[in-house]
Image (cartoon, rainbow, N blue to C red):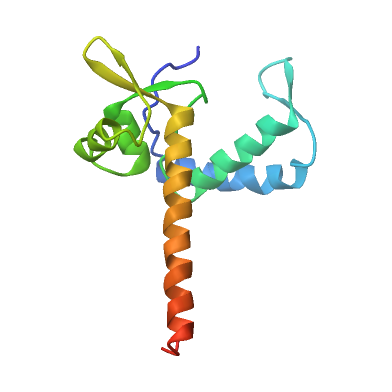
Length: 147
């Protein structure tokens, strides 16, 4: 049964170990579809290549002990979920919404943010920070500051 909440799953040490072992096998197969069979079952399942790539990314994060979550691109998130995904406080996120930097819609009195819009906002911020760092590095070169 598919889960409809987007709470992160924090892997245990055993989960991380199992993810590393599975990852070692899957990375060799990432170039195409993958067929696998559960030992106790007669059912074989074919995963398309994009799903295999997602599985490899998931296992990589789990192997490193990182919390993971799966969010459909069309998902609507609460302001707390959106803030958690960005690693910012909910009040900061609400301020960004109120200042028009992050699109949202209201459901009654509650704000909802599309995952797609949240990722676009994040990418724009990442690009802005990267440009600022490039500008600082260029200034350092121009002033011969040694970095």
